[in-house]
Image 1 (tube, rainbow, N blue to C red):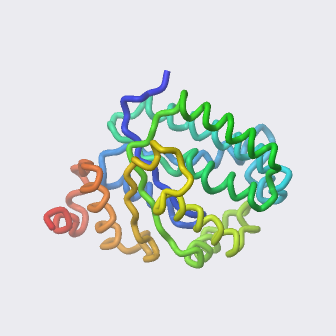
Image 2: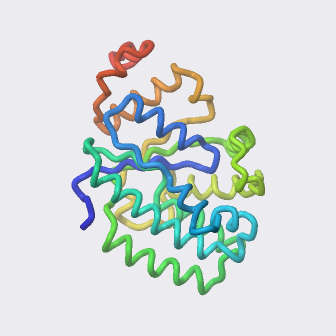
Length: 241
């Protein structure tokens, strides 16, 4: 049975926007249950690294990867929801960005055939409509593709070495289309609130930038601060503003 009693906020953003780092920061200050992207599951499918296979031969592995990404995302959320003490799950990326950004991009690039795309959309709609918990809201880390590329180079994840600027630009446009302009998405998704954060500045090492984002999220979604975080730096001054 799905754990539908938990509210779910989704952190969305391009590759290299800083979602993993941002999730850790949010978890440091707010009373939430973090749900990281299941990258390790993609890297260790038996003896295979599916993430590496995808980037090495996108045309061969697009449909396989997107199918497995869907399953692992849903399982990761449900496992976290069962053990969560907080009423809020904050999830790193979702099946919706898979559908409206990554899988769609694979099809438009010719890496997914028309038949595979039709099959994907058909089972995606059926499963999402009947067997997944709808999100409470999205937190979109809006970041320029050039900055995403620089952050990718810094983190040096081996599988992502083929990712270039043009690929990031295509994904950026698709994130903007569905999260900001809400074009071509399901009717119920158009009603889900989206908090857009400008994340071009370095929030990993800039404490003031962290506090600004945390207060914006807490106010927008009515989240509680963690008691042990109130003594950190000048967070109190941000809360009082």
